[in-house]
Image (cartoon, rainbow, N blue to C red; front, top):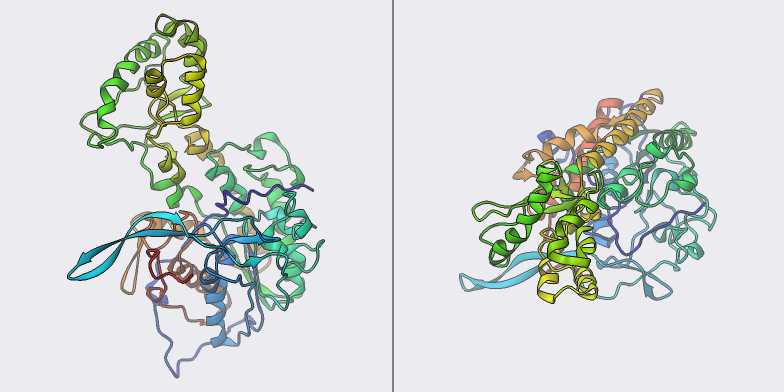
Length: 537
């Protein structure tokens, strides 16, 4: 089956941090007694996607893996008889992967630092995320061998875990295999779940399904919802799509059956609200401030242009599409909404007096636009283009015969050239995501109950992080981008502190289910986002 992988634009998986129970911020002192309860933690195996692997800051790098939630949990399991925990560690903290010497995945993000003099000492102040420079050293053809406990595969969706050939190095250039799995798969035909089951764990975690909706979400809903198409074949789910609910349920059940076949106990983790992560909550729907020195001088010309269009919108029965930029308050971005009636033909007539034979060409970029509202979500990636000149559109307009000055006015992203679908999630798209998530989570909860496994309700406890934050010993963990401590610089995956919080929450669910008394960790001892200065290379 063909499963295309997008390596360079890598925002795989969804992030979650959970539990606001401060009892986990406890130290382990000599003489404390801990008990395994009804579970056996002798050999712990963890299965999943990027969240399980320790992926962070847009890449899989050494420090991230060392702070993966399964590795943190394994260290705590040692207090109740847990054994060695092996991970397919990469070679460096840059994070990129090589295939025959050519880099195929990007390096990690870091915060660019600006050094300023404070109290006669140079201090690095973080500014914006950048890709860390350097040549990575992890070559995927150098197979990782030896016993493994962590089978987290970035980019994996639920059906990828049962797909033969997903770890074939020969399939990586063709896009039919996953480079992260290829570097540690037991053979070219192996499946992730068979390799994980062969590890013969006595206890396991399974966290999969985030990517089955996340790729659709982070791409702005440009894919298809297979619950609408009715497509159930795993081979035909497609890139940037929502996995069919029935497909998810069937494959997920087979994963649980594989991992429990030897009598192992474990924990199943459900899917959080992916639209609550910083990737969707950082950029406001009204990003254009009237005091912005670049935007403010453009307001008169922009409003003058839209005055004629607004009359047309009202005349054609769509006054809600009118656009006016404020000189006193932040103005919404202009977005393209494919659910709107396309009124390009009517606008062509309205714009003919101004643009003559080019009216149709100009009108097509306004036929399905509207101002964004608080119900729309702008992606983190939109921040790179908002207010910038769309060079492709500018060239098209000039090539069609518009004067450069007019073409320039009509080419500002989010102002006159509407933000395209990949940068926004409309309420309709959000509804599709929420519906699939609810179905997936019902499947996960049902299988946990049917198999006597611990159930981790990540969706519920994420609300605390997303809505004001949760306290820990020494601070407050929030989802604020780059400053809240929970999320790394890709806006999707946890920081080490976020992964520690995740580990604590899963431990809490395990203790509740199996009567164990596994201690948590002090999450304040784990790093959050840092400036690039001083980062390990």
